[in-house]
Length: 344
Image 1 (cartoon, one colour):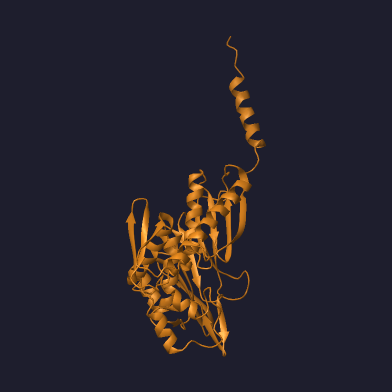
Image 2 (cartoon, rainbow, N blue to C red; image 1 turned 90 degrees about the vertical axis):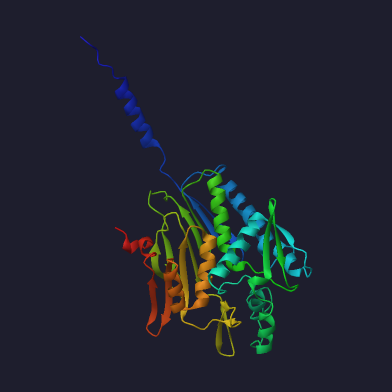
């Protein structure tokens, strides 16, 4: 008579007990401030060294990025470039060149609606490092500022492991702040991937990168907020599914002067803040840097031109317009698969 071995059964029982005793997956979350706004990083994978190491590496990364593109830091690379009145190009690292190149490419694609040299106009209207004006800028001041604007006056040339950034007029002013949030979100995502983290949600203000799932095994969800002063009001919810989402709006950064509201969204063609009814534009693309460039350009265009541009280029775009009856949202067909309400 054969003896039945209990070893496989015992091993299975032990494995079941060990599995039952394993702690449930937990999320790691850090947050902080950067570029005059906030950031948050949420992981459902472990980070080497834990939360303290994650915080330290992300903060160091963001500090390095600020040293490259912050116009508020007089010692940053971009501030030194803006002060340089000579014609000799300035060497910059590949990380900064990636942002400049995206700005130049998006500027050409949108026919100047995004212009990373629009800084003189941004500063003139009081939305840059300079103080806000005590009165509306004159037509002459606007004309003089516009003479310093144009991506055709900017050059970027690869040279070995770095790039040469040049300008054809001495007082050209480069401003990459409209791309900073997207660039930071992408940089953090690259850091996480290098560390073997593949389930994460990165938020740098309106620029979001996500991949994988949260600790409950569900896809990450991101809210598109109502463009109003009501905190927490949600317009819609999307699942980026590994893509990047960036939202630009004209409803938070503004001021009033002589009874009129001025938005920080400046149209390079007119030299003035936009006055149309488009108040929010969201774009989904593979990288947050690209989405961050396009959402600003769409905000400059206005509702009809923005929708026409998005349709022509088959972009995943979600627009919110202010009407007499409240807010009205619409989106391109390419955006629909990312909406939670459109999913089973």
